[in-house]
Image 1 (tube, one colour):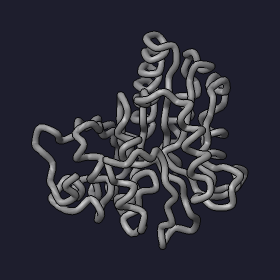
Image 2 (image 1 turned 60 degrees about the vertical axis):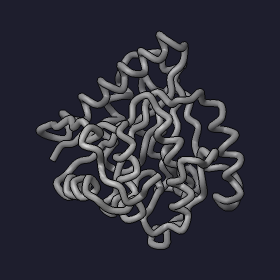
Image 3 (image 1 turned 90 degrees about the vertical axis):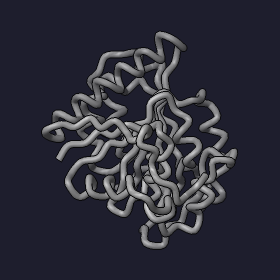
Image 4 (image 1 turned 180 degrees about the vertical axis):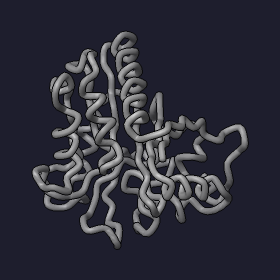
Length: 240
């Protein structure tokens, strides 16, 4: 992978723009629900990878109200902080409270936090748990930080080159970003790209400007979201 390349004009992501975040969340929930229904109809099961943070919560709420065969859906996370699942910083806790509820309460959630003391010790158990999900994933919904990180592929993390390595056979890796309060478990770039639909869900002018920077020439190590954009497979969903 050429980490200093720029986007091929034919690979610039399609952008779905909405006037406000509520409208965006509702439209995205409808699209993802349709994708899950299609997967169930065609393959008898569906998979969804989601991200944490405040941005996806209205989307989660809308998706949890959609009628579909939730007992045939497996949900997992793009990344997780290495904290107990009841900790307020846990992405699993967030997803259980905002998505795996209502109609979606029958879905299976495979978390990335294991009983092991460190994410390094937990990586193999995570790999084993994720192996239960057929690939490619049906839908992956990513977020993006103001520093251009996605999942837990942080620009200053020493593990970033391994996370961006498209020749790696690993599905997940332990990450210790120097400026983040907790160590992490993250899906690798290769695993995230192994999806039928890949979505970058962002809101606000600041993140729009980061996205615009990421479209420009530069290293993926500077803005890791560049590695996703340069795959030519992602679509962007955005509202101010």
